[in-house]
Image (cartoon, helix red, strand yellow):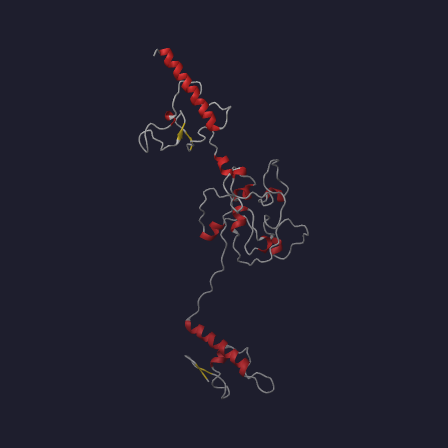
Amino acid sequence: MTGADNNALLEEIAQLAGAINRHKSKNHGFKPSSYGSSYVAQDSYRGRGRGRGRGGNRGGFRSRGGRYRGNFSQRNPYNYDASASRLSLPKIDSFCSIYTRTGTCSQGQACRYIHDASRVALCRASLHGECRNPTCTLSHEPNEHNAPLCTHFAQGRCTRDDCKYTHMVNLTRDAPTCRAFALEGWCDAGAKCTKCHIYHCPDFEESGGKCPRPQCPLKHVLRLKKPAQPSEPKAQEEKVSVSSLLQSLTREDGEDEDGTDTYESSSSDEDIEHSSSTAPENSLAVNDDFVSL
């Protein structure tokens, strides 16, 4: 066989390989890189070795430039589309946190989580009418789920009928930051939530000054706690407990027939300690270590 015959045979084989590849990819207008060339087999697209050997890629699809294009597919080696394969996966019955926080998701329809356009975080600039982004994907309609709490309402002095902020009715003075609202900008509990809807970092607040995110967009605030009351001496505590016990007992059992109390509840501790010398026989006698009738 001459060299011309050999070249003609190689060209015919390359054309057949291209036709087979187009049929596999189900795209008959697509021409792979092997079409019209002297390239014969697909083995060159794979690594030269096997497994973890030199040049091996463990069966991964590899281009001529040496870069991986993703997992090798025997059925569709040239048109492998990860997003298309995700469309066939079952949906997860949970909202996409990225879409809720930003109003957009890079996965689009291929995202397995739920994208709800009515469940999006609020644009903070829109609260003051200062949003200048014509393509802003955040919500510009405040409601009880995405708007921060009204501090004036918490203090009992909000006079606005159309207040844009959330009037939270179940807050206590030491209520912590709502993690769902701070991280995602949305809380399903709304105005009935027992935690504060503010843009403070919950991790920084709960850990006492540590945040796991290096570029956290939230405010880092530590709340002041009430100082603990100084502990009194043990003898003083026993003195107070005896006093309270005596007052409670005299209110229940120390009434005379005319309805007046034998002892006044406003008596001081000093009077209670020395009441054994002046009290009637049926009253309580208070000693240093115990109480006796």
